[in-house]
Length: 346
Ligand code: ADP
Ligand code: DAR
Image (cartoon, rainbow, N blue to C red; front, side):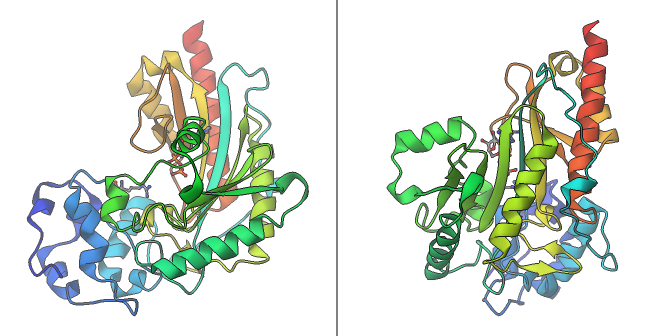
C-alpha cells in the first residue's frame, strides 16, 4: 500500500496526475474493492510510467464506484461524459451510412474494427486470479471453436506457439505484442503467456484475442475500405459470442473495461491508409482529424510510428456515443482526409 502521495506524479502530464490531488489521495488510499484491489494497484501504471496519457486502470467493475472521485474526473475529461449521462449501444450495421470511400483501393490498405469485452462477475485482467484467467481461456475458446460457416476457425494458445509463429502473426497485424510497460505496471501481464491466445477464422477476417488488455478483444478486419462489411461481420460475431458469454455491462458506463479510455462501446474502428501528402502537412492533418473526432496513430499498435506515409486512423470517442456513431466518426474522418489528400496531390 502506498502510504504517501507518489513523487513521480508531480512531473507527470497524465490525467491521473491532473486529478489525483493529495487530498483525494488521502481520501482514497485505504479503500479497496471486494477483490482486494487498492488505489495503489489502480494508479501503479501511471506512477511507474509518468509519461502515461491516462495512468490508471480498474481492477473490477466495483473499482469505478470505490474510486469514483478519481475515475469520474478522468472519464469526464477524456470522454466528456458526466455521472448523470447514460451510455447508449447500437450494433445495427443497417444504421451505418458508409459506402466504400475508396472503391479503387488507392488509399485504404485495410480496415479493422474491434471491441473489448470482459466476463461479467469476475475481476478484470488487472486483478484476476490465475485460475479465473485459465477458466476464461477454456470457456471462451470452447465457444469459439464451436462456430461454423464464415466464423469457423481455430484457437492458438500463446503457450504452445513458436516464437516464429508469434512474430509472424504480429507482423501481419493479427496478434498482440507482449504487454508493454504500461500494461506490465497495471498487472495485465501476470503469468504471461499462460492462458493467453488468439482465435481466428480460416480467412483471418474474424479474430478474438483472449486475456490481453481485456479478457476478450473481438476483431473483424480485412484488406481494403469496405468498412460496412467489416462492421457487419463484427456485429454478427459479437451476437454469436454473447449467446454463451455474459459480458460485464453497466447502464451508465456501458461495457466495462480495465482502461477507462475503452469504456462504453469499447470500440476502435481503424483504417491503415496512405496519406503521404497530409503527412507532410501535419498541422492540417491534425486539424482535420480533430474536427472529425479521429486520432492519428502508427501502424504497429499503440505508441508505434507511421511507416511509408501509411497511418492508422481511428475513432476517438467510445463512451456516450453508440457503436454505429463510433464507426461513422471514423468513416466521416476518412472521407474528409481522402478528399484533402486528393487536393494536395493535384
Ligand atoms: P487495439 O485497438 O486492439 O488496441 P492496436 O492499435 O494495439 O489495437 O493494434 C493491434 C494490432 O492491430 C497491431 O498489430 C496493429 O498494427 C493492428 N491494426 C490496427 N488497426 C489495423 C488496421 N486498420 N489494419 C490492419 N491492422 C491493424
Ligand atoms: N498507455 C496507457 C493507456 C492509454 C490508453 N490505451 C490503452 N488502454 N491501451 C496510458 O495511460 O497512456
